[in-house]
Image 1 (spheres, rainbow, N blue to C red):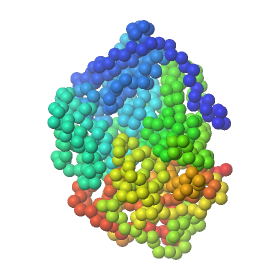
Image 2: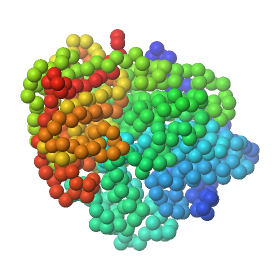
Image 3: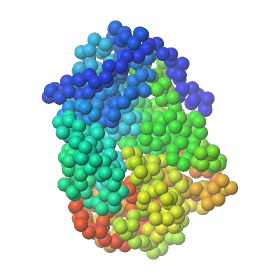
Image 4: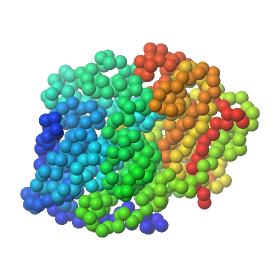
Length: 615
């Protein structure tokens, strides 16, 4: 099985270079409204001269610096024309940037332009990661001509549910994105002109002060240097105020689940990681929706990766072994060769889902200082995995997780002070700069996190309520989506509740204090507890039900380890902090402490539901 898995992943490594490379930078592709988008061409060549003839085309539409594309070089040398384009309003492309709103039309128009070129054979594939995955979804929803196959990696999608809003909370990595990636060097706010030195300096200083800005939220329009970039400020202010998953989010041309009927019926290879910031959207939303509704092949691969980390064997402080990283270009080449060149490489006959099951390692310390978690690749016929059995572990007074339902007991109470939020240590984050680190980390504070005041474990905080099993008597595999059914009350008119799944490693010679490794987490804002498309009042003192769904995972909890759930009311700066006042989102002027109660009794039996794979 493990040999077969490696063969599946590495097939295509022998694909030889057939051509030299010719690069034509700065081509201006016209859109329907006359705006021209800057486009670089990577073409097969002989002795530096582009080869005559028609080739299949691979397109990447990105908001980031195009630079020199390694993928462009790789695929052009293997007989593809690669088109790398800056989206509207970014890196020299004309027009104004407006967070994905134009990418369906611009993607459609770019495809039309490509089809008219003498080097195009009529077939277009798309590739790209993150935002450039979202632009692919936008092209498919627009039914772009010539589009035959896609590989959206860690793709931005369904942003009103997760990724930007998250069950009503705001993911502050997009505050960081706007303050850094959306900066004077990349935007064309001044009609394509380079900004003056004073303006550039002010915006650069703003980016360096992000931790201070986050401590002083809310963001008010006109009160920061971001006012010099009005389209960026307008989007961020509205996104931070818009908690409802309503038409403002659903009409985006990247909202796959809301526009699945418009989505072009073509083969799509969905790629994500257990620690990716878009993992839940890819695995739990986009892939299931398209695999059920489309005739064309939909494939899914989920590795133990952080955002864009498909070639890596680690995520944060966790090492998974050399098999975890892919030769990713070779994998993509197989996909495009099959659908753009009709090469019979049998990729369509292989199982549609491949996952990396983490957790078979012995926990030793690697030379890099990471904990060896280990794991292996496994084929599946579907996602979610049908044979997974829901196993409920109930919260008990005293911090126990048990398969037995709880007895009568008083709730566990804690105080949530929004001025002292729980620090983010790892998780499903990206675009975070120095604010937080992506991946798996021992849940202990450390000096290089601006939110940490000490070096104690998070479990030592009074506002983190821990429920854990005794040491396991046998290995237990959890593969799928975890769900926390929480019964809680608050003294506030609005508040948040967070849940985090933790793998507790026992003490060892390498790690004398053990390791509390984060596996998955999530949050729910009280007023958006159900449904998320409209606000629902929180009644202070009343017991409400909260459903918290951490991102999907696949992990073997080893014998001797403990399964742990941490409950709190903040995870900062992964999410914005609820001020507990009930004021309009991102418009509060006050912050108040909230008295929280977690219930664990026969009537209000809080629990975590784990998708367990039977032996």
